[in-house]
Image (cartoon, rainbow, N blue to C red; front, side, top):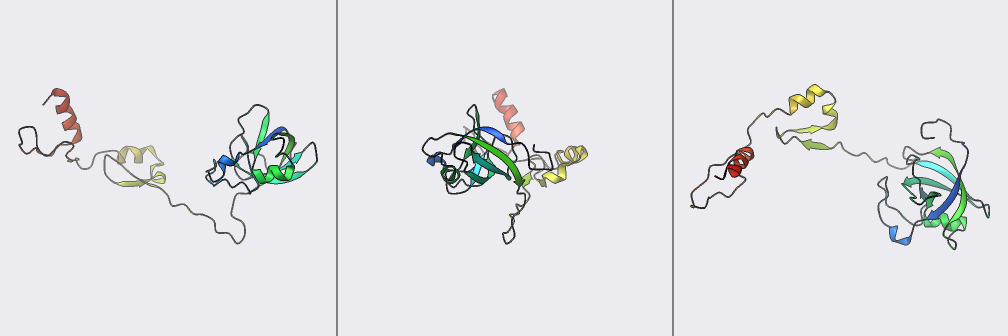
Length: 185
């Protein structure tokens, strides 16, 4: 389903439930904040941004929702709906209803008039060299091997500046300090 180019597919049939009020304001699996009045849902396998048309089999009511979370994790259920979507389908009183969910589209970019969010690339410090790198810098294994070599010895003090005899201690590397500690110095 996720890899196909057409979206009009056979409907998924099963039970649908809806989010409890305690989830209002919490983060969903795609990173957005769940709001009970939004038309969203959770599905176990469909990619985030998939648009589903969900139809209540009992009364024929339909809603269009966007997948932005993972779940439901109860056997036999195919989607967890937001409170607003469940209200539109008329399943608030029963809590669970038989539905058909049809994949009708996919949203991958911001709509017209909306700004797309650009997340800066994460910079990580290499603990051995003290230099910053980006994940994109480590594409080749040669880059990984070259950047893990120690370029300058670390000389940080990892123990008190004075020992038990109140004498000044020379700053040592962590590995040296650890070896001495094991030997009982």
